Length: 563
Image (cartoon, rainbow, N blue to C red; front, top):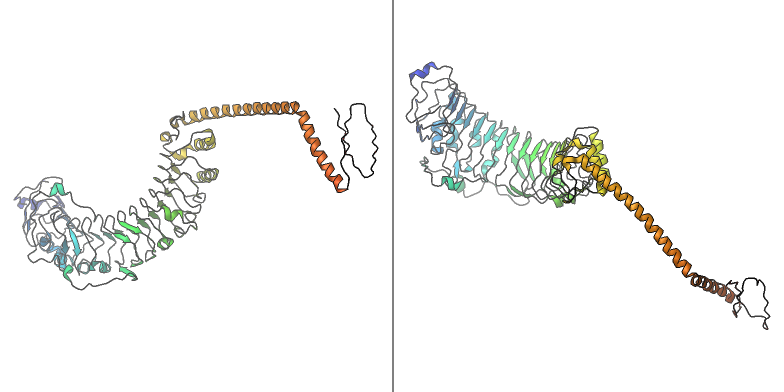
């Protein structure tokens, strides 16, 4: 429904008692309210859901929604000129309604200095039964002291996304939100599109008395941390989900203790948390954690020790290769016995310790894509619950016999999908066994037709896997025959050549043997005191000869050498 300037809901709307939803958003249509008077909704009392987003509202009287007893959802987002100064008038009387969801996203100009959300802005919400509250995209840099304690006790979901939050005393007041289950503080790094908005006219309502830097002007800090301090953060006792992705978190994660007995989901991706070495306490119930894209280069077993109930862990797009590859004792994932999804993609891993995943028997999804792996050299046979393994965009050329046996064992027990896209597979005779095995288990490999060989000159085409493998087998068989024939010929030639050499040099060989035998015999004779004095040669037919020695102690070496 479009809402032009100075539009009024006349008396005829009183008959529309079934009208419960009013969507006049300028995002999906045309809306130019400008002024929201106190009696704006006097003739439509039965509304449950109102969307006034992007309606160019500039001025609001006190309590325009007070008569809407059935109101449950209210959205005044993207009215940039309202400012926080209008919140008391907008929220006045909401405690008389059935309000459950209130969205006030981007009600301040996109360009400007950081602002502070104070107790005076949200005081009228304290007595409501709100479940969901959002102040996203409002240039909030600081949340004043006492804001959280003055929020509705029934609040379950709270969002400060797309703001500029810095650290402050409000961090130690989270625990006052007793029923909060989801806290969204994402995209604190994202900046507005300045070149699109810098020249747009935006006259935001200003505070009569500025309180935007009240907390910042405190001369004495509430807390002072030392390097050796053990930090304890008290969170809402029912908090289940904490979103802090893209939130300007920077540095080493310190030794940290949190009081959040029900925290199950933690999202802190796209930050600059570059070292994860300190132990964490209070995360024992955590089931999902995302720390991807944090430029982290160091992780220790102490950091992961408390995540015993984790089912989902994403450590993608970091630089954890050194820490993981040097974990020879395989302690980093030792305690993740319940883990079902592990994402280690884009970590520059070139190899992994054999036992790195030894505790992950319940793992279902393993992502190792976009690394530098050349082989699958780790144990996976025990992971019989796997249904997805991603090895795409690595340097894998083949699988070892042990890996093929392990995967065959898994294939016999579950329907697992393997991604091997963009690897350097060898389509050669040496890799024939692996290619045969892959063809037998082709159904387990996704997008096989898009695989390619590392040798661009090969005729192997995975679009015609079976035919290509058949051609390769024939080529390899022909090669084996030629190798066998060549080996026989070479052996024969070598033997013939050796025989000819022996035949031609038979006398030299006999003389060499004689010299060797004579030397040994004379050595024995000398030991007995005899002296070598002659050599006797005989011809065929002469078997006897005599020699008279004038000296009784002379020694003759007699050798029968047939000419």
